[in-house]
Amino acid sequence: MMVTVPRIAAVSYLNTIPFIYGIEHAGDLRAELLTFPPADCARAFREGRADVALVPAAAVPSLAGARIVTDYCIGASGPVRTVVLAGDTPPELAERVYLDPHSLTSVQLAGYLYAECWHRTPEYFVLDDCRRLDRPAPGDAFLLIGDKVFDREDRFVCSRDLAAEWIRATGLPFAFAVWVAREEVAPETTDALQRALTFGIEHTYEAIVAHGFDRKPYDAYDYLTRNIDFVFDIEKRRALRKFWDSGLKVSPRANPG
Image (tube, one colour):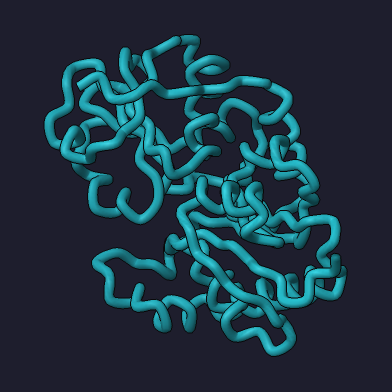
C-alpha cells in the first residue's frame, strides 16, 4: 500500500531543532510530524507508527525494512558536549555506570568505550531517578545526554565527552542518529525531506528563536554550529560500520536501590 501522508518521527531535543524547523516550514513536504525521545523514535518506526524517522544509529541494524535516507544526521566531528560520562572520580575507572535510557546509541557507545578503550567491565544500571545525580557514591559514573547536560555539566569533578573519546580511539567522526524510511516511502518524499532538512540547517538561528532556545542560559547557536555536525558523510558511514561490527551490547539492569 502506498503511503500518501507519511508520518515522520523526530527527536524532541535542541540538536534536532533545525530539522524540526525545516520540516515545519518546508514548502513541498506533506507529512505528519511526531516528536519523541530518541529511543521512542526507533520504537515508533518498528511498530509501524512512523514511516520515516530519525533513529538512534545503534538501532538501525535491528529495524526490519529500514533504509538510510538523506545526507543528514546528528553527528559530531569533535566534542559533542551533550553526551558525557560524568562522576566525581574519572568515569573510565567507574565500578557502576548509570545510563540514561533515552538514547540507545549513547548507551552502546559507552559500552564500546569501556570494553575497547578503557578495558573495564563495570556494572550497568538504568538511570531512572535523576536524584541519584545529587548523591553519587565513590565509583559511580553517569551517562548524561541531551539538553539536561547543560544544567549539570559543571556538577561533577570529572567528565568524558563520548564523541571526543570515540574520535581519539578511532580517528573517525561519529553519527548518533540517522534518518531511515520504509521501502514503500516514495522517493519524492525522501527528496522533499532532504530539501526540508537543508532549509532548516540554513536557518538554524531562526529555528532557535522559533523554539525559544534563544532565551536559554547557554548559547544554543554556538552549540548547534560548533558541536553538532549534521552532514552524514563517508567518514561517518565508516564510523557506524565500525560501531555496528563491534557487536557490543550493553543491557543495563534495574536500579539497585
